[in-house]
Image 1 (cartoon, rainbow, N blue to C red):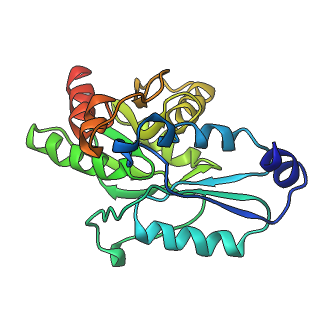
Image 2 (cartoon, rainbow, N blue to C red):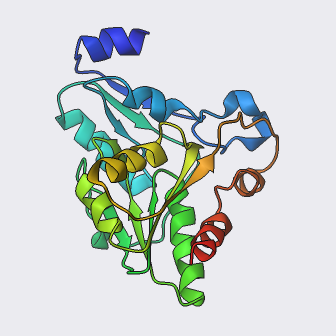
Length: 225
């Protein structure tokens, strides 16, 4: 209520950092420490910009962009260091513009936050099976890069992956764009389904359990082939 009314309705120039709890990074601490709804909640607030960085590079750029921007701003962080392995010299960051990390023509994988690491790994696994995958980091979930989504729809399948519920998060946002544009490209949304992440385990175990690992992306892509 305070974020919605004081920041959103008041259009205050306040930056909020949602740190330590996003996704299933803290698998051993249980469901109470898995913030799987934050992007959806923040997307609903008018005037709010919502960013979920994939790694340290995007985090630094997002903080700089937030400081330079006017209006309320939410940056969702997961704990830990998850380098993507993509040289920073080959990358660019702009609010509202997806970053293409891998080119491909058969399928498009759109990730946000730490799930981008799994998207890149899925791209490598698919290449071994002869499937060319475009991988995008959709660090800015609001405002969403509609052009990048529609370009992704020119492949034969769009997949989204996020450490978040598929309702209201990246998958929901991409689905809205595709539906409004009348795009006929199939969409598969990978992430937490309409359940609580009520399990305790390692980070890797929980990603596999809830379909947020690279293998789930590969299965979805091959199943739609």
